[in-house]
Image: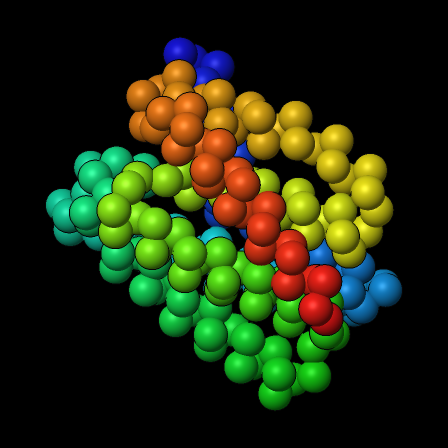
Length: 187
């Protein structure tokens, strides 16, 4: 159980997004100048939602960051969608590289799909985020990033081991997350 807790805490969406979006931004620009764009994406996709969850926890709305009751998750998805939308607008106005804009679009589409599925069935957001970031890194950098799916498997395992999700919920989340990288096919 301790290992599962460490894996789920270290590879939580906020952390995966900070690392991954920074790398995607760098790849999108072709050099370090994309890093600030990636960090803006990470703030919008990961930091803002994590801060909102923490704020609601302090208010007593939720017991922990996992928000295990799917019926309480909709506000989080709306915060993510709004934050991604605002971040994308700032990127458009600032002339961000196309690749980071496509990543934001992929995350936005994935979030819409997560919200839709979540209305009827609990799905793993942690698995979706980790899988989506790995897939986008593989598309923007090199196919060798697919080896990081070992970490995605670790995220899925930890979520099941801790009792937050079933195996089907993590596989569905990982599959949905990977589909977000499909946005790059149309860019």
